[in-house]
Amino acid sequence: MKILEVKDHNHMPPINRYAITWEINTLCNYACDYCDLHGKDVSTNHDKVVEFINYVGSHKNVKLTLFGGEPSLHPDIINVLKNLNVKVEMYTNLSRRLDFYKEVILVKPDIELETSFHPSREKFDTFYEKVKYLADKLYKLEVVYMLDTAYPTYREDYEKIKKLRSDRVSTIIAKVEHSGQKSLSEEDECWYMGEQEGKDLTITYEQDGLVQSTETISNYLFANRLNQFKYFLCGCGVHNIFIAYDGEVYPCLDYRRREVDPYFNVGDDYEEEFKKISTKEIVCKMNSCSSELGVPKKRILSK
Image (tube, rainbow, N blue to C red; front, top):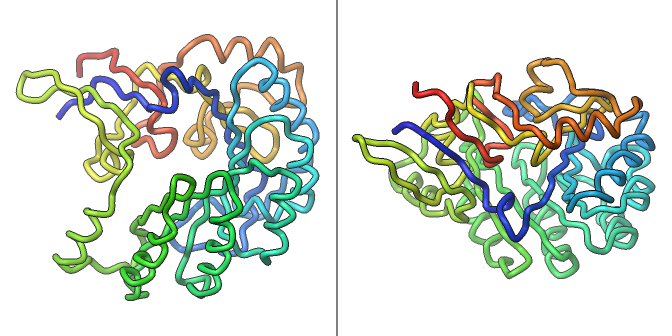
C-alpha cells in the first residue's frame, strides 16, 4: 500500500480549527518507561505564550492542547487557564487530588480533559473514582487506558471504564511499548483489536494499481508503518503549531524532538512570522512521523 494523501476530519469544514499544542512543561511525576516526553523543564515565559495564543485566537478558531510532561504540575497552571481566551484541552494523568480538578473546572468551565491511566503508577480504583466524578462535570472527557501486560486486570478495568461512555465521554485502550511487555494471547489480541474505534482519518492510497480511499484511525498508520511522510506536502503550520516549554515555535512535535530549528520564539515580534508560517504548507523533513498524523498531507513525489 502506498499512501497518497491523509486528511483528518478535525481539519476539514465545517470545523476547520487551528490546533496549537503547548508543551507547558516537561516535568512529570510518573516518568513511565514507555514514554520519552518527560524531563525537568518548566515554562517560565508563560505570560508571553498566553499572549501569543490569544493573538492567534483572535484570528483563527483555535483549539489549544496543554501538553507535557504533566501540565497540571506547572506552578501557575490555574492562572494560565484563567488568562487563556481560547478553547482548551489538557492532557493529564489525573495524579493530582480531586480538589485540584474541581478548581480547574471552576476557572475554565468548558475545558476538555484527556486523561490517561498508567497501571504501574496509579491504583485503578483511585483513578476510576476521579474519572467517574469528572464524567458528570466536563463538556468532554477522554479516558486512555495504557495496556501493560504486567498488570493482567486490563480487560476487567477497561470494561468498567467503558460503562462511563456517553456523548461527552470517550474511551481508548492503547498498548504500551517497553522491554517487559509480553505479547497478548490470541483471544486478548482479538479483544484488543475489537476495541479500536473512532475513525478520524481519511486516507487515499494506491494498491495493485488502483487508487482508493477509506476511513481509519491513527493507530492503523502506526501499526502498519504507514507513517512515512518524508517529502510529503504537509499542513503543519497552516493547520497547527507546537510551542515548546521555552517559547520556541515549531510546525510539530517531531521537529521539536529532533532539534530542527524553530520558526521563531514567542518573545520575538511574532505577528509577521506567524503570518508567514500559517499561509504556506511545508515539505516534511521527518520520516516515521509520530505526531500530528492527521494533519493534511499529500505525496508530491512518485516514490
